[in-house]
Image (cartoon, rainbow, N blue to C red; front, side):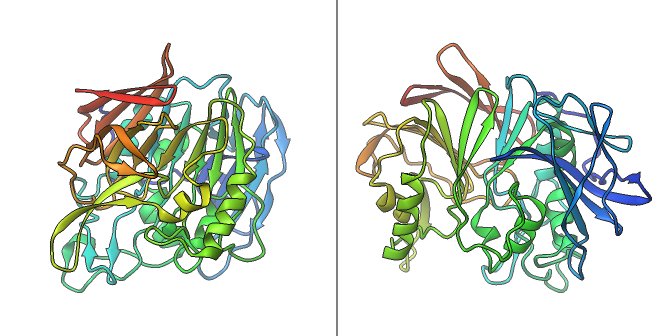
Length: 411
């Protein structure tokens, strides 16, 4: 991966169309295809052209006191060139040869947890850097596995690390936490955007559905939205909204909802499941006595699925745990990748070997973790997929191989 000589104090590129200032523009893939989305400082939607023809953008949500106008339009299948004025929008490529993946990207400013990252320090919060690095590789697709907004509280008085930071579910926070640092990648390729628990309705759900979700705007923020399918050329993804899935217990009502969602997945062979909370993951925590222990995630999803994925699912991609994890299992179920490395404060390191660790009715046959910020890159290989984890300073930490029901990494 090349380290681009781009300033890390990234500015949103503003374009003008019909007198409107375009604050952000990007392409998100959904169940109906590729959606061109624009966030506009103005009263009317901008002019969109696709392959030289005008395509009308519709108002997704009018401006209000918290958010500017949001507009979108479904791109025609096979579109080659899309533009908002002079700004080029990424369109789906004829084939996908390179995917950039990460999640858990925002800068944590949270009085409830008492955690305050230094949002102004690119070493402490490197999302802008990882975005530049990933964009320099010219991906054909970007997958974000959820948790975009972490600026939930005002920055404490006297703490310079996040001085002046906005807070709450509003455009200023979304712009600072996501749209400004992600700008190079938003220009580089279409995205698949998974909802995380930070985008639950009592947190940043309003902004997520207004700004990022590819489906029609719901009348009210859904507690758990429906699973949907994304066709990305030869790849098929099923996006499962697991933000409300309890990590520790499996309440009957939640398990029933997710059981129905799993039952509704009709996956062709080789499909991927994208869900913020891992189906199977390991996190290190301290108990009430201060003792460190390994804990398995996610009880709700495991009970709802019975630890059996729908037929056809070959890989699970998740975030939520702020580490990189590559897990293969003794019963040869689909491997699990955990990609919570984009920038939010990291989870505790796991130095314990995971091979033989019991989880989800089986044991881990291969486990590799990394306590680093970074971005993961996937490219097709003869056997399946090659997976490379780059840290935020562009060093390769792992090279992994994904094949049917197995994962392995070197070194």
